[in-house]
Image (cartoon, rainbow, N blue to C red; front, side, top):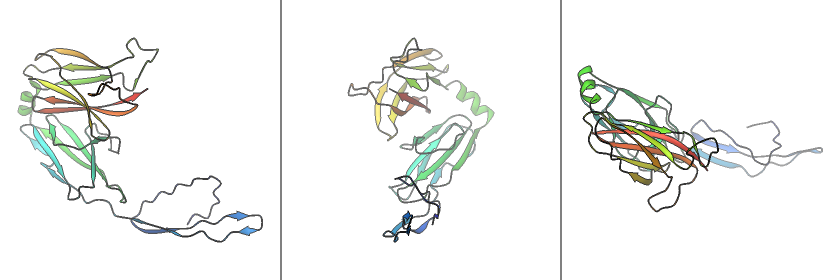
Length: 237
């Protein structure tokens, strides 16, 4: 119970414990306190159980494909690979993750009516010999400007987002898929970059249906060479 008077029309309550919670409201006047309102009962379920991560973090001598499995289809899994803690604006897990270089995979589970899960971390490292082989295939992808502000008067090119690719010496064909925060495919780009070369792509913010995307967070995923590179960009219109 919060005994402090609330003057705002809206009052937000943070619930960080599972179980049944009961709330009621009273009003204070010069003549005294009103009768309590009808009690509200809220039941919060415990955090989802930890998922099955296969293979788990560890040292490997070749790239690995990591799957994340839960026993409840209503659970949403979000993850990061850039050392930040995941939240609902991070990458939504929709398919196995290709890992080709040393990194820490962080995972967090969410389910409506339940407390969010704790951050789960798995560290993946590769032996030096594996690293030498991977370096011939690895592709680098940079996104700028980020955040991207459409029609920004301070930018020379404010109509499109730049995707800068650098392919490894033995890289094969790659493609770029762009997703929204719901995990829905927005559009696909097919670079013509040759192995060992660099290419700059410009995305005009159009979807496959020809309409421009709205403001929000988008995930740009490069797929190829048995690896996946993910980048996040914010678009402001």
